[in-house]
Length: 335
Image (cartoon, rainbow, N blue to C red; front, side, top):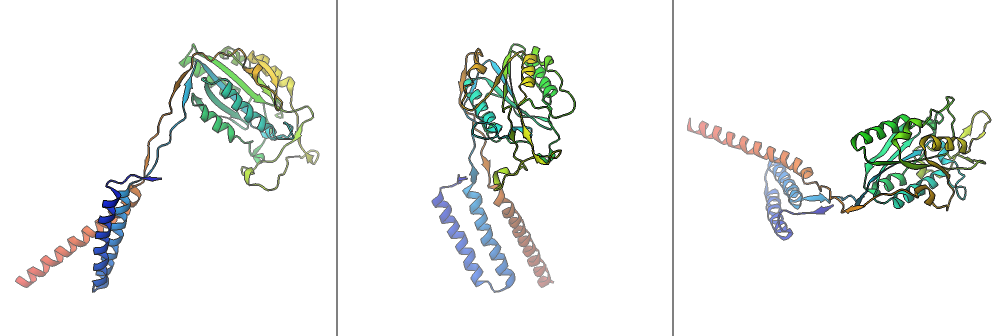
């Protein structure tokens, strides 16, 4: 928060001292309780008036610099509980690899427009199509698994209809644009119903890749209650059919099938590997850079102005009452 005073600070200080000093002096010499209360309220009004005049403001925030090219990139991420399976790198959650790869995609395809979609119980577009790369990176950095308590199994086709709607709308709005889809997941299908085919998306997609996370050995999955960052003790999801810790394993056959239906390549991801093959051949086109757009500052002067206005109305009401009493006294004296 900063101050943008309506008058120089020095002038405001002098005026405040003069007004507050006079009010305090009148308070000390007041003879009745009613007068003392009136002057106390006037001291408060002086303080509130000073706050209004100082004009506190929360500075405007600016979006980061943007780069616009000729490609739309849709990053689709599986955030079901299996994304917390600890078989990435040095027994880290798969989500760590997903976040690192999203950041790398944004860097490698600088100038493209990006959108981030996640799916677990339901698909959600976390970030609509934007040229602000920092928006995607920020959203990706805070991705978390679904809350374990609400997990009801996973289906790898969960984002299919949702993604089809987004891509269809985009194609109608800008038919000449390239649309790239990156599907990030482990291919694990725990729902009893067989997944639907992604064939219907193929005409809407001009490139991309399916990126797979996890190992055939698998890893146990840490429970997530929505407050994992504050937890001191990690618990793991249980397999209630065996009474032991559940293990999630990658299904590369399912992921390869999705890639084939989309008409893109499948790549198994491992810590430290380059994403180069997944972005090779994608031409973002001519990139136009633009500065960040400043937002609007948030004015806070109205907060002290509300009680100041109420006290001012009370003061006016008091003066009006005093005038009426004075007139009434004069009429009685004349009669």
